[in-house]
Image 1: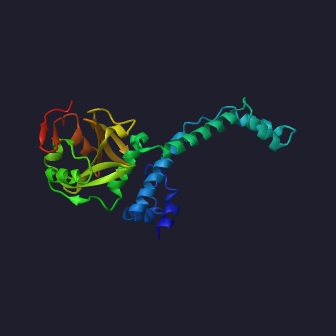
Image 2: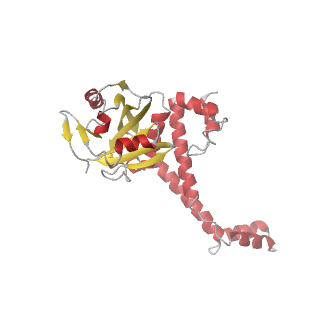
Image 3: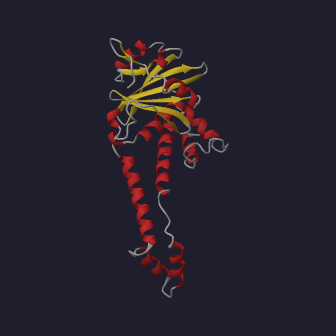
Length: 275
């Protein structure tokens, strides 16, 4: 199977991972895990499908729609003329429904073309989850300690002034780091080993590039493309942690009782609170 064949199959893959167990999609999904370009295309396709699906679900079918269509069909005039006239009648629910669908599709198109500064956090989270789960190029450099990682990030235009919970500096080992691109903005990623075989990826970006950044110093747990995540904003930065295990791992790392933070920069400064 080549990339074009995989795209043809994945175009019908429903958002939210509902088709993850369907063997029809298995070869294409496997190729997406190995092909970075295909993985990026698939992430955009899923985000667009989810946006259109959510928008269309907001359209209510008028209660009189069926009766009006049936009544129009019984009129003596040509069905085409009657349908066309009723379609654009101000009193017709059909015209309002059609107008609503057109406006929704236009808004989706405009959203998809919006600059990075206006992109929603949900789309950012979906793309970072895709990078964490499917991108075979997981880290740019292996790093076993934060000083090494921060030094590397600072020389590669990544975010290097990081304030992280102390739980990420305890029993959980740092494995490596990476710099990604989000519509021209640099995003830093730190990869941690958790509970032996599982791991958590932490993405860091500037908060001002999101119109709907997560709450300030209030971890928000959620699911993105079927993966447990937690996000929060602190000191002008947005943090997104993606678990490759389950939601309990994130709650262990960032539950209400895990309030102590460490700020990493040069030199290292310790911060005792998360308020």
